[in-house]
Image (cartoon, rainbow, N blue to C red):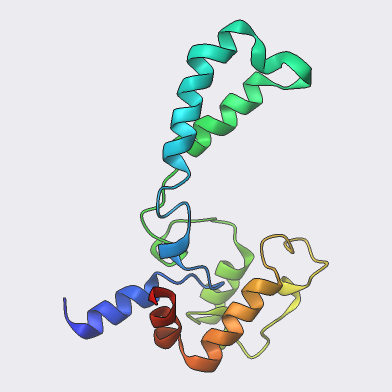
Length: 147
């Protein structure tokens, strides 16, 4: 792989919103493996005894959630077609033809509003991350993630 191709590949591992695949629990598979182990444990020991339904818990919902987590892995980010398909930042960046939200002249816009619908996903930390990328450049920002 040439140096230019490596730079492009690394840049594509950074989502429109600034998430970096190499540090994401979905990409690194850090969620799937423990969820699968816990699911097996619950199904083989606790569900049968009704223990998980004790104290107001709901075994069905717990197992459903663990099944989703245990089967979910991300091989690539939103730029490669994975991730949250309805992501408003992704849709906006694609529509505007930008690689990163910070490249838009309106950044940060209403999507990043602290009181908005997606404020739990698009928060102050992500705004600061994108501002840092804009300030020092994406390639330099990626280098710093590896330090």
